[in-house]
Image (cartoon, rainbow, N blue to C red; front, side):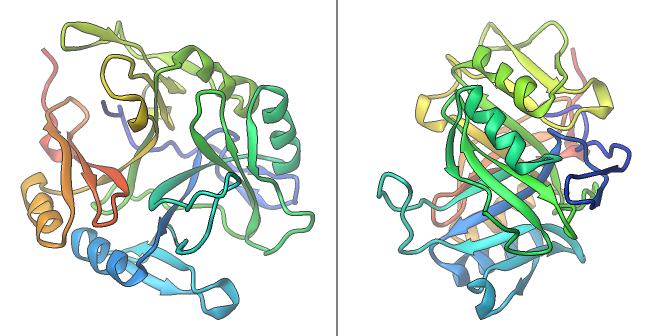
Length: 288
């Protein structure tokens, strides 16, 4: 499954903090890599994408900012020894955040719409960069909320190494209407369905055509339940070269490559098991 274009760039607006952001509520804003081995993650992703990593220092628990050619990609946080609300260890994974105008109000709205709050907005802003919360939506997927302060979010450049697309894969597609109620998503069905194994696949984007910012996919019958959740795609120039680096650096291929009109897409696991997609837009096939 893929995307018609990269993340959209809406007009500027003002958040509840008075900060100016170029993202409207419900568009992709940020992504974080949770890892238990920072050095290994830096080696792997730096080798695959050529990313640069900036250690924010002891005051921020040695979290890192990730850049690609100087443009912001996201953050990296070491979660070794950390546990979730149920007491289980936090897994290595990529986390996606959507832009909101008011983290407190949108979190409250999410609860009313059936979400569980995993990390509530802090009582006071912990940083001038912005305010965040993490919830579990009614489909069971974790999703973050980001209210911009001085940090608007990642920078979409369209070049290799940049975030290219975000999508929720779910067995509970109808419950994904949650994103309309909470994040003002404008869900637009994609074509007449995309044939996969003889079955039409329901897929909707937030916004039509090239203005789309993310996708929601009915993955029932396509993928197992434990593979559900938010996925992030990163652009690459050449699939085979990227896969060679993935394997050399201890990663593995989970699925693909799959040819599509939206690029050649491959699902990857990093050395710790965190999954993501690579998309070679220059290798896109024509429909038909």
